[in-house]
Length: 114
Image (cartoon, rainbow, N blue to C red; front, side, top):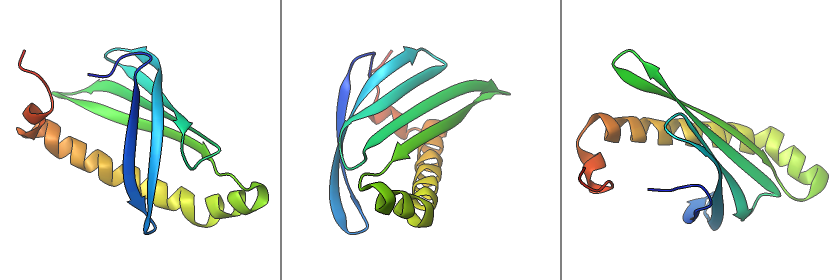
Protein backbone atom coordinates (compact mmCIF):
# COMPACT_ATOMS: atom_id res chain seq x y z
CA UNK A 1 0.00 0.00 0.00
CA UNK A 2 1.40 3.38 -1.01
CA UNK A 3 1.75 6.12 1.60
CA UNK A 4 2.75 9.77 1.70
CA UNK A 5 6.27 10.20 0.32
CA UNK A 6 6.42 6.82 -1.44
CA UNK A 7 7.68 6.73 -5.01
CA UNK A 8 6.67 4.29 -7.72
CA UNK A 9 8.16 3.73 -11.16
CA UNK A 10 6.00 2.65 -14.09
CA UNK A 11 7.12 1.40 -17.47
CA UNK A 12 4.69 1.35 -20.38
CA UNK A 13 4.65 1.67 -24.13
CA UNK A 14 2.86 4.67 -25.62
CA UNK A 15 2.85 5.41 -29.34
CA UNK A 16 5.25 2.49 -29.82
CA UNK A 17 7.89 3.99 -27.51
CA UNK A 18 8.76 2.60 -24.08
CA UNK A 19 8.38 5.25 -21.38
CA UNK A 20 9.53 5.13 -17.76
CA UNK A 21 7.87 7.47 -15.27
CA UNK A 22 8.57 7.87 -11.56
CA UNK A 23 5.90 9.51 -9.42
CA UNK A 24 5.86 10.36 -5.75
CA UNK A 25 2.82 10.45 -3.46
CA UNK A 26 2.85 14.15 -2.51
CA UNK A 27 -0.54 14.41 -0.77
CA UNK A 28 -2.47 11.72 1.08
CA UNK A 29 -5.79 11.96 2.91
CA UNK A 30 -7.06 8.40 3.26
CA UNK A 31 -9.54 7.21 2.30
CA UNK A 32 -10.79 10.14 0.22
CA UNK A 33 -7.82 11.49 -1.71
CA UNK A 34 -4.23 11.17 -2.82
CA UNK A 35 -2.04 12.92 -5.33
CA UNK A 36 1.02 11.74 -7.19
CA UNK A 37 3.40 14.04 -9.01
CA UNK A 38 5.96 13.05 -11.62
CA UNK A 39 9.54 13.16 -10.38
CA UNK A 40 11.11 11.78 -13.56
CA UNK A 41 9.65 11.08 -16.97
CA UNK A 42 8.68 12.37 -20.38
CA UNK A 43 6.51 15.31 -19.28
CA UNK A 44 7.78 18.70 -18.20
CA UNK A 45 5.29 18.41 -15.32
CA UNK A 46 2.56 15.93 -14.39
CA UNK A 47 0.17 15.90 -11.42
CA UNK A 48 -2.48 13.24 -10.89
CA UNK A 49 -5.16 13.68 -8.22
CA UNK A 50 -7.35 10.73 -7.18
CA UNK A 51 -10.67 11.38 -5.38
CA UNK A 52 -12.86 8.68 -3.82
CA UNK A 53 -16.44 9.42 -2.70
CA UNK A 54 -19.20 7.14 -1.40
CA UNK A 55 -21.82 6.46 -4.07
CA UNK A 56 -24.72 4.27 -3.01
CA UNK A 57 -23.35 0.85 -2.15
CA UNK A 58 -20.05 1.63 -3.89
CA UNK A 59 -17.43 4.28 -4.48
CA UNK A 60 -17.04 6.92 -7.17
CA UNK A 61 -13.44 7.47 -8.26
CA UNK A 62 -12.58 10.74 -10.00
CA UNK A 63 -9.22 11.59 -11.56
CA UNK A 64 -7.84 15.06 -12.15
CA UNK A 65 -4.83 14.83 -14.43
CA UNK A 66 -2.74 17.85 -15.35
CA UNK A 67 0.38 17.76 -17.49
CA UNK A 68 2.64 19.92 -19.58
CA UNK A 69 4.77 18.44 -22.33
CA UNK A 70 8.35 19.57 -22.93
CA UNK A 71 9.47 21.38 -26.08
CA UNK A 72 7.59 24.66 -25.61
CA UNK A 73 5.28 25.49 -28.50
CA UNK A 74 5.73 22.05 -30.10
CA UNK A 75 4.79 20.39 -26.81
CA UNK A 76 1.68 22.56 -26.42
CA UNK A 77 0.69 21.72 -29.98
CA UNK A 78 1.12 17.98 -29.30
CA UNK A 79 -0.92 18.36 -26.08
CA UNK A 80 -3.80 20.02 -27.94
CA UNK A 81 -3.78 17.81 -31.03
CA UNK A 82 -3.02 14.37 -29.59
CA UNK A 83 -2.05 13.94 -25.96
CA UNK A 84 -5.11 15.40 -24.20
CA UNK A 85 -7.48 13.04 -26.01
CA UNK A 86 -5.07 10.09 -25.77
CA UNK A 87 -4.52 10.49 -22.03
CA UNK A 88 -8.25 10.95 -21.33
CA UNK A 89 -8.92 7.69 -23.17
CA UNK A 90 -6.02 5.97 -21.34
CA UNK A 91 -7.30 7.05 -17.91
CA UNK A 92 -10.87 6.06 -18.77
CA UNK A 93 -9.72 2.57 -19.82
CA UNK A 94 -7.57 2.23 -16.71
CA UNK A 95 -10.51 3.27 -14.53
CA UNK A 96 -12.68 0.61 -16.17
CA UNK A 97 -10.05 -2.06 -15.43
CA UNK A 98 -9.77 -0.90 -11.80
CA UNK A 99 -13.58 -0.99 -11.47
CA UNK A 100 -13.70 -4.53 -12.83
CA UNK A 101 -10.94 -5.62 -10.44
CA UNK A 102 -12.50 -3.90 -7.40
CA UNK A 103 -15.94 -5.37 -8.06
CA UNK A 104 -14.58 -8.86 -8.71
CA UNK A 105 -12.08 -10.99 -6.85
CA UNK A 106 -8.83 -10.13 -8.65
CA UNK A 107 -8.04 -7.30 -6.21
CA UNK A 108 -7.10 -9.99 -3.68
CA UNK A 109 -3.88 -10.63 -5.65
CA UNK A 110 -2.66 -7.12 -4.83
CA UNK A 111 -3.71 -6.54 -1.22
CA UNK A 112 -2.60 -8.46 1.85
CA UNK A 113 -5.26 -10.38 3.82
CA UNK A 114 -6.93 -8.30 6.54
